[in-house]
Each structure stands twice: as structure tokens, then as C-alpha cells.
Image (cartoon, rainbow, N blue to C red; front, side):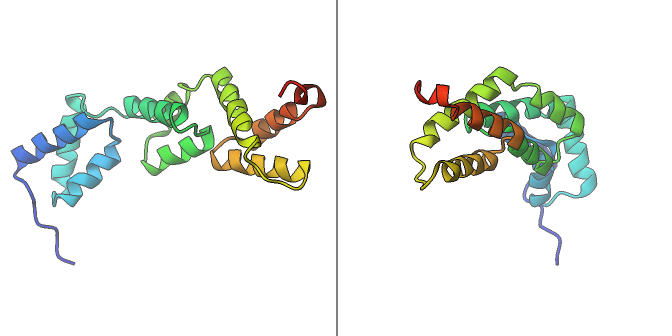
Length: 165
């Protein structure tokens, strides 16, 4: 396979990648992949990355916090799915932990309860058992931990709570 042809000269490359980083927070690996797509070689890519980090265009911790915050608050993802997403973007373990600190434990439980409230009326099931299973599967696909999910489902379906719902 022939090497990719360089698309831009070095000055234009740096200007374009800075503009791309200005659009939203980026992981270093995203930027690295983009630069390789533009036909740069390893030394040039690493030099660009170093300059972007020095100029504060790239910051892994800031990216991790923004990613976690957005995926939790907007998409209602759980920790497991967020963690997998950050690992896919090759974010360091330290930055992943700092990012996950953005999730308030009380908000996390409230979000699970809200998702249960929203989904329980939409689930078609022949039995209470089947409804609980479908609900648990839904929340697991959203990335919530199974122990917390089952605690919240059990609390939701307690006889004293059913009269309030």
C-alpha cells in the first residue's frame, strides 16, 4: 500500500488542526488519527500533538470531563458505557477516573429512576418478571451497573411504591 499523499503544508496543517480542535474537545488519539489521514508521518504527527498540548488546544483531562458530562447528562449513559467509550478513545486511566468524578452519585441514581419511570409504561410484557427483565436489559445497554439497576428496579416495584406510581 502506497503512503498517503500529504494534503497540506506544515503551517496550514497546524492551522487546520487547531481550528478542528476549536470546534469541540478532542482526544489526542482522534487528532493523531486525523493527522495520519492527512498524510503526515509519525515525527510530524507527534510534533503537532506536542505543540497542541503546549498551546492548550489538547487536554486529556478536560476532554475526559467534557465527554463524561455530555454522555451522562445528555445521552443518559451509565458509567460502564462511558468508561468503554473513553477506552476506545485511548484516554489514560488517570484522566478516565478524573472524568468519572463528574458524575454525582445522587444524580446517577435519580437518572436511573427517571429512566425506569419513563420506560416502565412502554414495556410490553406478559408478566411482572418479564417486565423487570426487559427493564434491566434496557438499563444495562445504557451502561448502568447491574447491582445498582436491580436495587432500583426492586425499589420501584415494592408494593408500597406501586401505589405512589
